[in-house]
Length: 117
Length: 109
Image 1 (cartoon, rainbow over the protein chains, first blue to last red):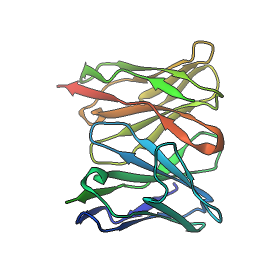
Image 2 (image 1 turned 120 degrees about the vertical axis):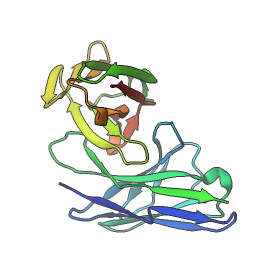
Image 3 (image 1 turned 90 degrees about the vertical axis):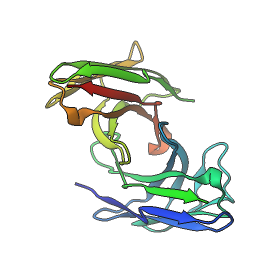
Image 4 (image 1 turned 60 degrees about the horizontal axis):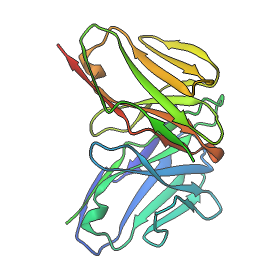
């Protein structure tokens, strides 16, 4: 089946620094990828839609200047958390639609646990 | 906009059957999906219903009633490994998936 990878799986950084998270589709091309954030014991909240070759589309309340998204190729999207603060500590997950059979199926990356000190 | 309601927690006994309900409000409907997520892991796709009725995949089944804006996930022959959070989800325009708040399933031996 389709595989989505994320790197790094875990990152700890100091407040004020920037962190880049990569999301790759390993065996299929993804013109669209999605970035979610999940706080402990809560649901996945969609942050933005990453579009290959064009600007990302952000959900209401998500600061586009803080969460920079670049969809560099058909297999890679990156999320950069700029000037990270402790409240940005969360589990960040990317996903890509499989594009098959209209099943609403998406494959998720394994997630990145970000801790900002 | 989209909104989904599901119970926050459900407890069941190993070997039993459990049903997790989901009601939704959507501006357009493109099917109801279910995802499973273990603690610390990523969500994994379980099932999808676009039309009314029951879809069965092994021990898991999913039901949809579009007229009632309602669906459920049925888990049979519960195993301890089924302890996880279960999310119902709907697709928005452009393939965005909007998740419910999730139901945490506790399984007792």
